[in-house]
Image (cartoon, rainbow, N blue to C red):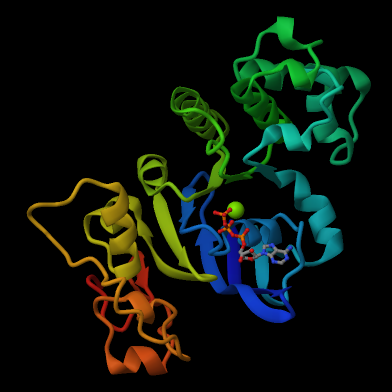
Length: 306
Ligand SMILES: Nc1ncnc2c1ncn2[C@@H]1O[C@H](COP(=O)(O)OP(=O)(O)OP(=O)(O)O)[C@@H](O)[C@H]1O
Ligand SMILES: [Mg+2]
């Protein structure tokens, strides 16, 4: 359904250009939930914004259902199929508008439909996310964080999208509300056969909701594979490090934490080389490409799997 090839995006900070996204490639099937995980600043949101056409790539291709999304006419036709949910929903609503009119906005530029149909569909979407009729006329500013995120989800599903990009959609919520929103997203996925690109820095959350996980480090995908396989047997030392930070230690399969004290100099080789417990001379010289074996892929010269 979605295919991303060699996506690159450079930004300039302090007059120095750097690649926020550096040759990212992956594909997604209809109805699939793909987690995009990695530390802050690794390029997750930039990747999402490139796919949702909020940013333009420097290089690379984005195909959706076999069509080139970079072409404006194709994007205009397909954009209703790709919706995005952000971390702070209140930022993307005008707080003075009521819930009903805010949700209706979601379709204004995407589809032509009669006033009555729009009203009907918006009310339907609001019911679908579990907000009662008594909320219709409430200004957005009177909604709680969780209710506001429900409103954002209602607006996102209004156009019957095929892919929803959730960029840290639950990160700003407290744990119990987070669980409710995750349950809502999972129910909608089943009911509407939605695919999610689920962006989070929370690997434990990704592990519980995603079918596959892509791990990003400094603008690149360093590991990609079915969630359970990646969690049970992480192939990249960076994934191992991430897992060691969030999941209980495996007594049967201990692994060494990278030695943060070592701090080897970063050269033209692997970006994780300065911290890697498996670093070898070749890692300083060459940048490992993503090697695929079956459904798994790892960008490391010494992967623990494959
Ligand atoms: N518009 C911009 N101009 C300059 N630099 C940017 C811009 N947007 C992002 N960056 C930089 O690009 C890098 C990747 O940013 P991005 O927001 O994609 O990271 P992220 O993985 O989503 O991080 P987080 O988990 O904190 O949301 C960061 O170093 C960020 O500071
Ligand atoms: Mg981000």
